[in-house]
Amino acid sequence: MEELKYPIGKFQFGGISAVERKERVEAIRNLPSELNQAIAGLTEQQLDTPYREGGWTVRIVVHHIADASIVFYTRSKTALTEDVPGTVGFSDQEWVKLADSKGAPKSSLLMLEGLHVRWSAILDAMKPEDFERKYTHFARGEEAVDFLLAYAAWHGKHHTAHITQLRKRMGW
Image 1 (cartoon, helix red, strand yellow):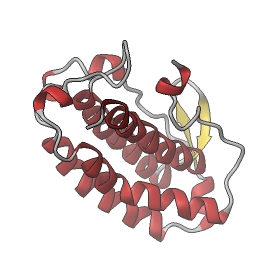
Image 2 (cartoon, rainbow, N blue to C red):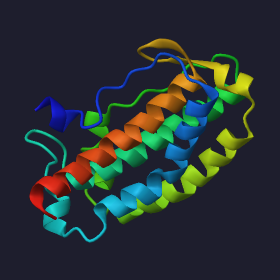
Image 3 (cartoon, rainbow, N blue to C red):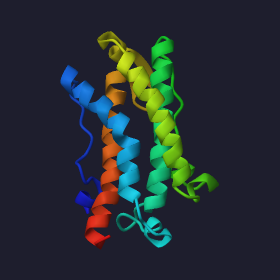
Image 4 (tube, helix red, strand yellow):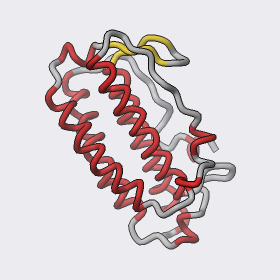
């Protein structure tokens, strides 16, 4: 069950090197394309299949990734433009219950494409010291943009793997 819940392992952060930073920026840049490939050709029934027992459906996972990306992008911009700003949290369990998480994943994929182009442009233009800028997470306290970058990159790969592993198990 743990492997189904965390197909690429749990998130761990112990700092980040310049090479790892570039890899994570690339992961953010490539997420929309990789997610689009992960759901390509799925039927409505397949989109409404949970990736594990008690887990979200593929459809909800796609919408959740878009929701999270909006929040991560906003945290990045806020940290770069304010001194240790507080950030707004979101209840992912409640957000996925809203009407926009019931529709076609295409809307979230389109949103992700534009959002990640803009986010990547910001990340590409940042200096090393910009990644050290801090924000205050509503639950965890003060964090650096480097932490957010690492988490966001892991988060996209984590949820995309939920879908690709489901496809593999189901023979889709």
